[in-house]
Amino acid sequence: MIPTQPIGSIPRPAALIDAVAANGGNSEDPALAPLFEDAIRDTISRFEATGSPVISDGEQRKYHNFFDYCVHGLPNMGPDGFKIPFAAGHTRRMPRLVSAPFRYKVHADQYLAVALRYATVPVKQAVISPSALSLLYPNEGIPDYSREQFIEDLLVEHVNEVRSCLQKGAHAVQIDFTEGRFAVKIDPTGALLASFIDLNNLALARFTADERARIGVHTCPGGDLDSTHSADADYAELLPSLLQLNVKNFYIALAGEPDRKRVLSVIKQYLQPHQRIFAGVVSPIDPRVETPEEVRDRVLEAAEYIPVAQLGTTDDCGFSPFSDDLSTTRAKAFAKIAARVKGTALASEILRASA
Ligand SMILES: [Zn+2]
Image 1 (tube, protein in one colour):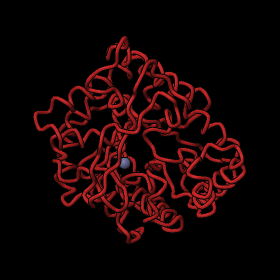
Image 2 (tube, rainbow, N blue to C red):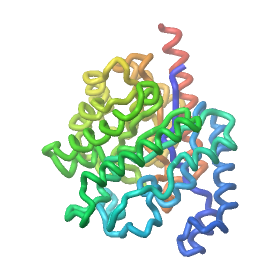
Image 3 (cartoon, protein in one colour):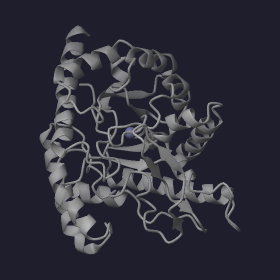
Image 4 (cartoon, rainbow, N blue to C red):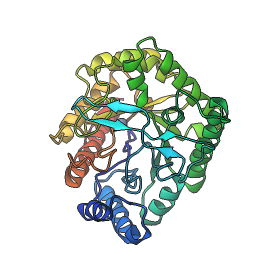
C-alpha cells in the first residue's frame, strides 16, 4: 500500500471559535479546556472515520496559527514582526522578539500527548521550522542578545520539541516549511532560501539517522482564506534546494499546481534514493471536493515520475492553518481526506496489479 498521511490542521468547531471570541480571544483560559477537549475528541473520531491510517489532532490547540503556537502569549513578544501578504489581499504577521531569552512557552508534544489518549491509529505531529522562527529576531538586533545566541537557543528548543514528540510515540513529525517557497518569491537571488536550508540542516544534524527517518518537511505556497502567498514563485527554484534537507520524508503540495508534470520532473531529477515524497493529491483551498477517481489518477501520474517504493500521498496543506479561516467547513475537510484515502487505495491496487 502507498502510505498516506495528513498535513495537520482541521477547522475548529463553531462552539469553540464562538467561545474563544466571547472570551476576548484568550484561547489559553483554563475555563475553555473542556471545549478544547471536546474539539480534539470529535476531530480524532471523525478523522478515524475517514479511514486515514495516520491522523492528527487537527491542530485544535494550535489555536491561533501553526507558526507562533510555541511562543504565543510570551511577554517578550511584540506584535509587529515579519509580514506575509496573501494573493487575496490580506496579510498575516508574525510576532517579533523584543528581549532575551528566546524560549518556547509550549512544545507540541503536549498536544500529541492529549491526541494519543483518544486515538486508536498512529498520530502525526507537526511543528514549526527553525527557519520560520528565525524571522522573529529583528533586523536591528537585540542589545546583549546576539543573533548567534538566539539561533543556538532556537535550535535547542526545536530539537527538544521534535525529539519529545518522537519519544512520546509520534508516528511521524512534520516540520512546517511554508516559508521556503515564500523565500524564493521575496529573494530571487536565492540567498534567503539557502540560509533557511542551512539553518534547518543544522537542526536536522542533531538527530540520529533513525530519528530522521521519522521526520519530514512540508512545503506549500501557503493556504489561507482559499488563497496563497507564493504560488507565483517557481517550484523549480525551490525543489532542488528542498531535497538537500537531510531528512527522509517530504510533504509536497502538488494538487493545486497548474503544471504538475513539470513539478514531478523536477522532483524526479533531484530525488535521492533514501527519500520519500508524499505528494499532495487534494487541495484544501479548492472549494470543490475531489473524487476518489481524480485522486487515483493523480497518484498514477506521480508514479510515472517517482518510484512507487518512494511515493506517498498527503493533502496539499492544512485545512485551517489559521483558526479564523472559516473558508472550509469541517465536513468538507473530512470529505477531502476521505477522497485522499480512497483514491490512494484505488491507485495502490492498480500499481500492485501491474508490478
Ligand atoms: Zn501548507
